[in-house]
Length: 61
Image (cartoon, rainbow, N blue to C red; front, side, top):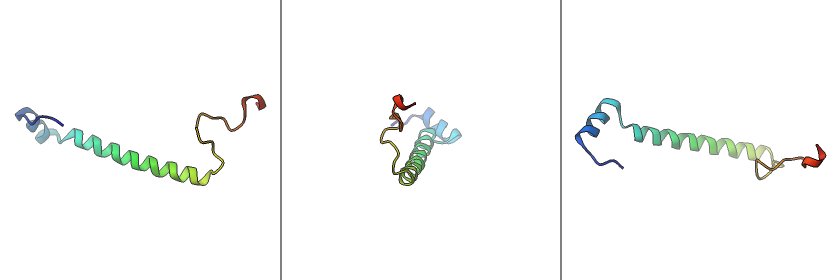
């Protein structure tokens, strides 16, 4: 991703490889969210396919 330079190498040594850490956290959050969404959809079989679709038509409100 980044071209290896002495400045970048020194920053990685001092602060850690931040892009790799961020990518790892993003992957973890993605996995956690996918797991939660699977549980939610399994426990609510009548849930609308699109979260923006109302369960009750607006005319009935």
